[in-house]
Length: 240
Image 1 (tube, rainbow, N blue to C red):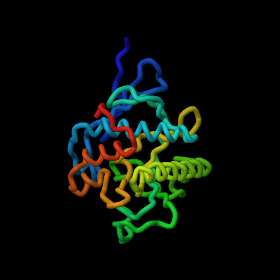
Image 2 (image 1 turned 135 degrees about the vertical axis):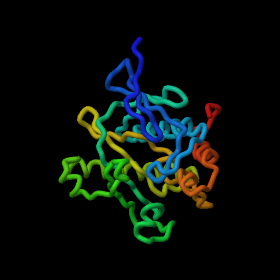
Image 3 (image 1 turned 135 degrees about the horizontal axis):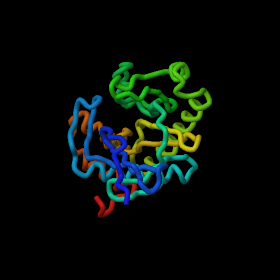
């Protein structure tokens, strides 16, 4: 039996080959948590398990409403089987409420509700700190064609709309989220993960932060609030 090999290791996940099918990979969720471009780092036992199940829940439900994703199935508590996509080097951030970098960059008050979702694009590069780029940058450096830029933005709006509704019914406000995309079989699909690591979740009533800002801002209770997100979504069980 062929052994799997490590293809890539990032800050929060590891990708392994899937010996039975070269077009698939195993995505392993780590307990590591980082902030400020890896300047701040810790390990929170069980975080990877929670994120695995939360991301699988969102990916499966997005597929059910017609959003193409890399997700195939959960393999175990920490791993899921996903399609081996060609990474698009652009991250999209969809913002519904002013928070984080947007508040700091423009001197805005955190918590201000935007009239409409705002999409920002960033060049995916840890060494450069993921700089913000415009559509003109994306076109000039041949990262995507105009039609592809429009396609991922439409996908981002649809994803944001669906998640906002799903979370609202659980008493959670989707403040913003980071999305990554890739090519698979000449189609653009959603990749990476959707979890408290990649989104800002606030309790709708108390505005309590339920995401990685608890680590960024030394608020504590990271595991507690990640678990609470899972519980409210109905996916908390004896597995974690």
